[in-house]
Length: 65
Image (cartoon, rainbow, N blue to C red; front, top):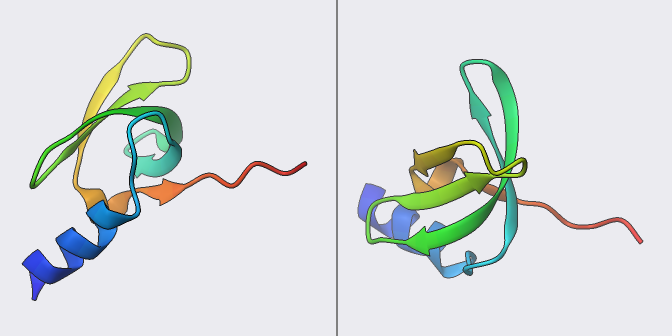
């Protein structure tokens, strides 16, 4: 069941997509740089940190126009 949730979350992600997720310090924003089977590498918006995040924890950011 967890694998199915993982696959569903992965199917909605693309390299270059802006995402948000929760960290210990609070919400973080970044850009997807690499997608693996069980984790996604996200580069922080300011470019100072890289996060290895489980795909189901990521939420795509929908830009308000």
